[in-house]
Length: 100
Length: 501
Image 1 (cartoon, rainbow over the protein chains, first blue to last red):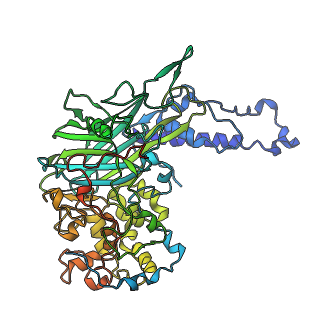
Image 2 (image 1 turned 90 degrees about the vertical axis):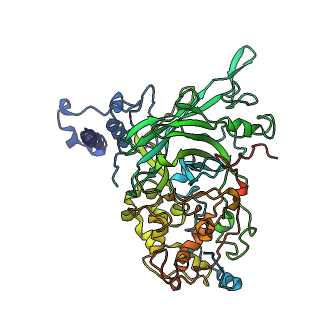
Image 3 (image 1 turned 30 degrees about the horizontal axis):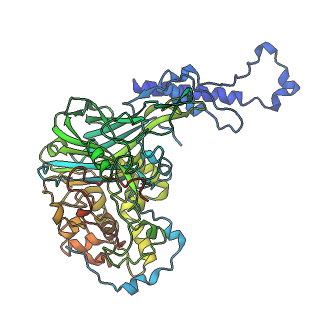
């Protein structure tokens, strides 16, 4: 059970990381004529800037840690608001390895 | 088994022209701010662990354990003074079968509750900026604006997944205990003895599940650890063969500390026929801490804390993470478990840096030449055979106490402990007055190789000729004896008042 939670957390982290990575690809190259060629309907909508902690981050410890790991160092943005967010806790699990 | 001097002081002092690089590895303050990460987290920074058979009259069948946290407290540190972290888990672990894993764990968790005390200012009620509003007397008086309470759980088996039960107050069965506010000053507690009376009201007789009764106290105490820490930081700017008792000032004499003190029946901690127990304390934080940019009014709203408990501080024997573990592995040590010590940190013990540094500072004090340093493996990782070594032991760093050795009466204790023939003292556990600085430096320089003799009576794997400086009475010049402390639980003395001027 715990293992599957960890795995799902890793999957979430990977997906979130991928999404952020894709969002970060919006460079000047995208504004070139070649980049403008695809029809508008096929273009992904710009990623919304999060202004508060998403409710999904509170669904499990794994989701919460994945959210935290997805936060990027940012010198210009305002911090996200906490609102009524409650962080999930687990008194029996081991801490999640972060790797190097 | 006494240490003696064999090298002239003048000769030893000849080597004070040392390199800064050699000296920067020193960080002698038992475990105060010893690691890069924990130095930034004072509320969860374990400073010292004490464990001994109770020497209070009538309590000899108990073990007293004191875990100190929050280092270098200036007594006047208001207005919040020093509170345990309500988002942390503080633990004292016991291994009673030598397998380097926790078999019994006591877990402290804290809660701060605001009474939102307000004063009528004009036509408005305005909240006060202090944690108390008037003089303090008794447990949780109305004048206390922030009530600090704690729970204490006992876990048998794995610290996280084992069987958990609450320690309860013998008077009424409550599971929540009040912690006294720190010693703000004599006026706040109505007299020079007011704080002592107040604090003593927070010593609880408790029922420990499956163990009978014991006692618990959590609160501020006068810092018991003593050391010439300033001179040691200053490139060991002292005479290591000077007076053992009056050579230097105790730089912690005017500091306080926060204690988790328990008195537990011996039988509660031991298992089977082995009287030796190992102990260490840890503090953990939730793995995910998210800072709130707009906390709402109230306490505990400045961050949200989620995830599993994640260990950030670890302490068993004094001085290990200070002068044994290398700087770059100190955070790693604080997050580690004893069962992994041999794989993670063995080189620091078998091939220690400290003796070489001491030789660099004082060339006449030659470092031991026996490698691997099996004598240090004994001192730090297994215990001494016939004294405090478990019947079966996996090498791991923790404080070990042979509970079958009777306690020494307060007036007969020797601060040099086992080395001076007082087997109820350090390194067989640790009492408040034990001079762990002098003993540890001497052991690092090979004292056990000298004490064991040519026949290796202590089975430490070395001989006197391996340790040319092993017989020196090395000292930082600071010494206390047991009379400087109380003779009854919680043994550590009343903290210094904030308004001492």
